[in-house]
Image (cartoon, rainbow, N blue to C red; front, top):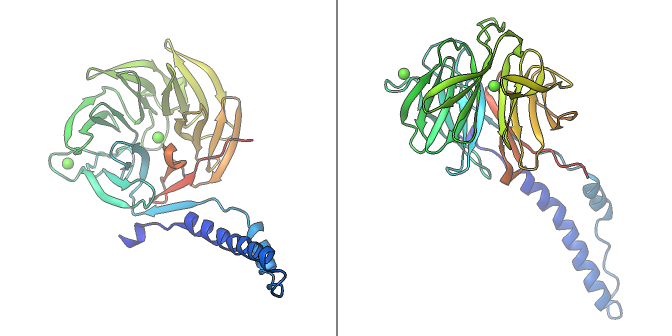
Length: 327
Ligand SMILES: [Ca+2]
Ligand SMILES: [Ca+2]
C-alpha cells in the first residue's frame, strides 16, 4: 500500500524556495536598524539563493501504481474519489474480472478500495469496464455490449442496459437527463466494423444517434452547452454529432484519440496514443502537453488543477497539472 501513496513534491519545492527569501528579508530588516552600532552582518548565501531562484518549476507528476489495464478515470466530487475502471485483461474479453478502483482525491491521493466494484463477485458482472458517467445516484459503466449501473455511494449493482449489436462500448458522458455512449466497433484485432455508433440512453433504452463504418471508431465523448462532441481512435478526428450527422469535423495533429474532456473555461483536453500526450486547446488550435505513454480516457479535478490520466499499457495512473492558460 505504501508504494501507492504519493509524495508532496510541490510542498517541498515551495518550502525550499521560501526559506532563503525569508532569511534575506530578515537580514535586510535588521541591517537598516543596526548599521550604526554593529558591523555589517554577513551577506546571505547569494550564489545558493540565485541557483534556487533560477531552477525551473518542474511539472509535478503523481504516479499511482497497482492498476490492471486502466482505461478511464472519473472524478466523483461528492465522494471525493477518483474512480478508475480496470479492464484486467483484453478489452473485448468477457472474463468477468474487471473492477473499479477508488482512489482518494488530492491532496494525499492513494488507493482506498482497489476493487470497490469487482466483477469477481457473484452478484457483479463486469467484463472489461471502460468509460464511466454519473447521473443522479447512479454510476454508469460501459462494458463491451452493455451499460452497467451501480449505486453511486455503495457500488451495489443496479441493473444494465444491454445494447444489441454493440461490440466495443467505450466512453460515456452525462447529458440533460440522458447518457451518451460511443461504440468504437473494434474487434479483438482492433479493426473497426459495423458496430461503430454513438448512442443516447434514456429511461433504460438505447437509441443510436449515428451509426456506421465511416465514423472513424468513436472513442471519447463529451457534452457541453447542448453540443455533443466525439473523438475517434482510428481516424484521429474530433467532431460534433448533430441531427444524425457529423459536423465541424477536424483532424488533430496526432491520432489514436481516446479521452475527451471540456473544462469549465471551455478548453478541450484530448488524449492521443500516437502523440503520447494530452492535447489542449480549442477546435482548430491545439497544443501538446506532457509526454504520457498510452494515455487513455482521462478525468479532471479542476479544484486541484489536475488531469487524471490512466496509462493503459503501464498499469498505473498519473495525475498531471492542468495546462495553464496562455498569458
Ligand atoms: Ca461476477
Ligand atoms: Ca476510451
